[in-house]
Length: 137
Image (tube, rainbow, N blue to C red; front, side, top):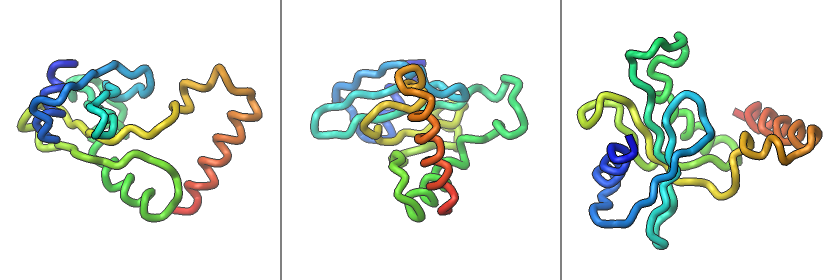
């Protein structure tokens, strides 16, 4: 899957000869995710590919990734929540029979990685802040 991901990134973003380093991400449970290190003049990336449709999915997971570009636009337009920008996505399934998205990688660490390093009050404050910001939509 890693080589497929690299090929798709190169094709969609025209990065034919740029050195890329893909590292599997431990975050996320729905899709396969890679953090992508790029040359210094480019932003690092996140590449996510949806699971095969042959898997038994919950009703809300079916084609779930296709909703993300529009959701990102709404959040970016209406809030100050720092979320990644969608750089490319493909739901046509012409290059690979799965949906995928490519976005810039935001600085920092995912909240899910910090769970064991933060106190309960810090986690609660972070979650409350997210919920408050989402009410602005």
